[in-house]
Structure formats: structure tokens, C-alpha cells
Image (cartoon, rainbow, N blue to C red):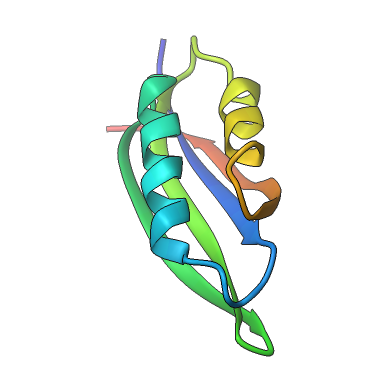
Amino acid sequence: MGVALITLKVMPTSPEVSLEEIKEKAKASIEEKKGKNTRFEEEPIAFGLKAIKAFFDLDESQELEPIEEELRKIENVSSVQVIDMRRAFG
């Protein structure tokens, strides 16, 4: 099996939410479900609201949906969306 490179967009409920707290919980959830090499970027949306982009590797034999479900359960997360998924080569 190969490795998939995944990018998820995690939207907080408001601009006042601690993005660092969401990142910590997201990283723990991703790694618990066998995701590796997790990193984050913040993307400005509007009016001070920032989305979190989570980048990680996942073995193709693993399901992505359980990771999405766990991230949706994090307090102050309004939505989670897969924005990119591709097979890693090399």
C-alpha cells in the first residue's frame, strides 16, 4: 500500500476561539488514528476569522472518515472539510 497526503480545512466557530488549542487536540486525534507528519497553517477567511489547514500523511489502508469525525467533535470546531488528497510518490 501507498501513502496518501491529506489536507483538511478545520473551521472554528468564531474568531475568539484559541486556534492553538484546536491544533493541539487535532494533532492528538490525527496521530491517534495513525496519521503522521502533522503540520498546520492558518488561512485568513474574513473579519478576523481564520481557518486551520491540517496537513498529514496517512497509509492508504487507513480510513479517513474516522479522523474527520474526531475533528468535528473538538470543542469550538464548526466544520471539517477535505480539500486535498493525493498519493505520495518517491
